[in-house]
Amino acid sequence: MHTSTINIDVHLDEQKVPQAIQWKASDSTADMAQPARAMMVAFWDAADKSALRIDLWTKEMMVDEMADFYYQTLMGMADTYMRATQQKEMMEDMKAFAKEFYKKFRDSQLKENQ
Image 1 (tube, rainbow, N blue to C red):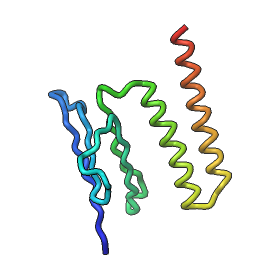
Image 2: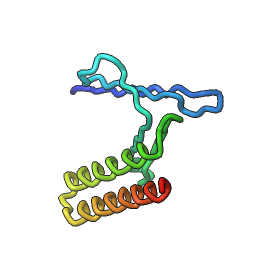
Image 3: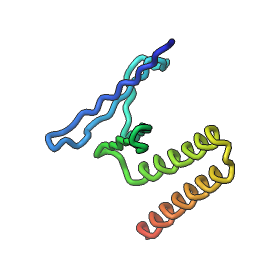
Image 4: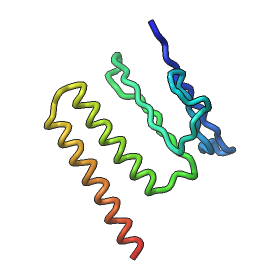
């Protein structure tokens, strides 16, 4: 059996706010750890029937980047849900929500910049 390892290093400031996030996967073609401004990791605990999550972002993460990150994550989750369940209608609903979320964000940014 093959084992793949993902290492995540989070560098914190004095107040324990993430300053830098770097990750490296053993099966990656990248030689060096890759920087990231934000991360989301979720695990399913079958015994408790609950999701355990780690959501972190650095001070450098901009609001527009966070909206892009959430939009892309929601779209990816919809695709994953479809592959896992074959429930096309649910996938389409999730993608519609993601698109509406992103549209509302963009509209709010236009209003702020007027």
